[in-house]
Structure formats: C-alpha cells, structure tokens
Length: 321
Image (cartoon, rainbow, N blue to C red; front, side, top):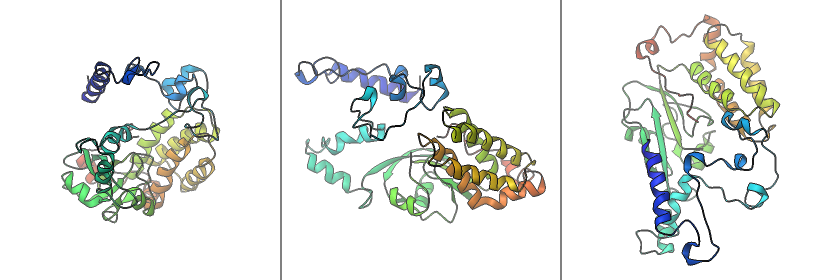
C-alpha cells in the first residue's frame, strides 16, 4: 500500500476517533461531516452522476456540463461547494489555526507571509522529477530561483535542455536560459508559462523534445472525456501527427497544422482540457522548432544515434499531469 495512501487513511481514522468527523462534531447536534473511503471517493462531477474528464468515469453515461457560476455558488447537486486542493488544506491549520504559535491566527498569518514574495507569499511543495540526482518533493518558499531549486535536487551530470515548471500542461522553458526564473505565480507568468501543480519535469540534452511531446499527447488523448469536438478530435489528431514526425514520416506543413489545431481548440471547450494539451504543443514548437524540422528533414530522430541513445532515458512520463 503506498505510503501517501496509508497516511491519508490514518488521518481520516484519527479525525473520527477525536470527534472531528462523524455525527455531531464539536458537540453540535446535527453538525455531521462524513468522508468516504478515499479510493471510492468520486470527483464532484462523478458524484453528481455526470461524466468527468477521464475514461474511468465514462461508464457514468453523462457528460461534463458548462456553468457560468463558480462552485461556491452552485457546485455539487447545485449546492454551494468548496473545492480546495490538498496543499491548501494542509497549510490552513498552520496559517489560521496558528499551529506551533499558541493558536494565534495573526502569528500564523505573519509566519506564512514571512516566506515567499510580496505577491506570492508562503511555501510550496515542488515535485521535482526527470534528470536530477535526487528527485522528490521539496517544500520551498515561493519565489525560489529555478536554478537553486535544481541544484538542491542534486544537479545533473549532463547539460540541461528544458524544463516543464508546473506539470505537463505548463508551457516548456529552455535551459539554461531560464535558470534565473522565479518559481512563483508572477515569475512564471512573466516567463510565459505557469506554476500550475508545481510539478517540475527536468530534461537534459539527451531528451528528444518531439518524443517528449508525443509521450504527453498520448496521455491527453487517452484522458479526454470526448464530449467537446475540439478536444475529442484534437487530442487524437495531435497525437497521430507528432507520432508521425517522431518516426521520420512527417511533413513541414504538419507544424502549421498542429499550431492551427491548438488555435482552434483553446477557449472552445467546456473545461480547460483543450488548453492543457495545446499549451505543450505551442511551446515545444515555438522553442524547439528546429528539432521538429530536423526530424522531418532527416526522416529520423537526430538524437537516436547520439547521446540520447547512449543514455537510454525518458524524462517525461505519460502520467506526469
């Protein structure tokens, strides 16, 4: 059983034992909060018997719906719904509960703001993977310099080539040109990408960007719920086109086709899945177009006979979202 799952189940059990979950919590009659067994807990769209953006929920027989309202106004079953990620929930007791500071919320807020930057205060668990000696999750202040972060993760024996700074849907950045980027919301926005999930995927000179993009697009083509035409058709076509280029069977016009496909999908689907698969296409072609053109011109991957073949490594996993 994975360690993270063990800790989650243990925390839920402890909350029940302490009376923080269950019936009449805090001694208030009718104040009931229950948590489903974590493996069975569905996403809000699935709990409402609407299909979510994943094949595992396709059997539900419904589809995601578009709503102009925020979940806090009308969410699950049309009721106000609070949606937070695990990072937010994990930090709240330390900020507003003043954990470790005598329960003083003002002290907790001051502690939080003592980290990070003025516009992006606080800490962030960065998940660093790929070509670093010590991949893992590093809790660091927002605004940490990218280069310092990668050195903290052990550095690497070969020159770095690129980094995806915020999960697979974030636009790719060149290295070493981007080592001075500030790893916070504003810094990455200024660099033309985003912090996203803070999933940092590092690639060295042996990585073929075309192959890395193909690997990501395989994931997105598999995960599309299939409701919106730009996403349903776009993910599949993008995967096939990039696969053809990687195999040495591409045409120069394929690059314009991919960019046109992205332009026609972004902003035209119910959810942001279109942006998720299109931003990697746009940024990979914009920053590494010469690599795509070399595949097409030489009818093969130019790195297969070079350092990449000797290294035999793949930096970007299909499930890196």
